Amino acid sequence: MPAPEGYVTKMAAITMIRQRTGYGRFVIEKKMAELEAAGNIRFHDNPGNERSKVISKLDVEKIVAALSLPPPE
Image (tube, rainbow, N blue to C red):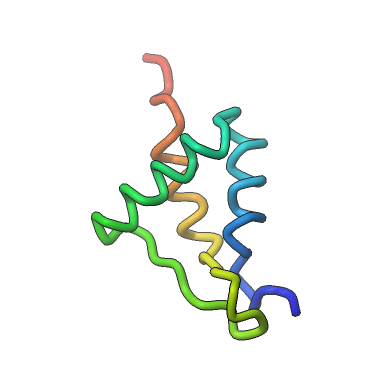
């Protein structure tokens, strides 16, 4: 079963973040863990698959922003 509207699976989120930032899975997962521990993002159980986690697309954007360089001045 696909993720609910407005959410993506953790693996899909990692793929999206990799494409946008160029970072690898381990760097992304480390940043995800840091942001989750700080309370900035939150994973939820996937209602359609008990072994899968989902994350909101807004939280994915927070991860991309945390991994992106600031704009040049």
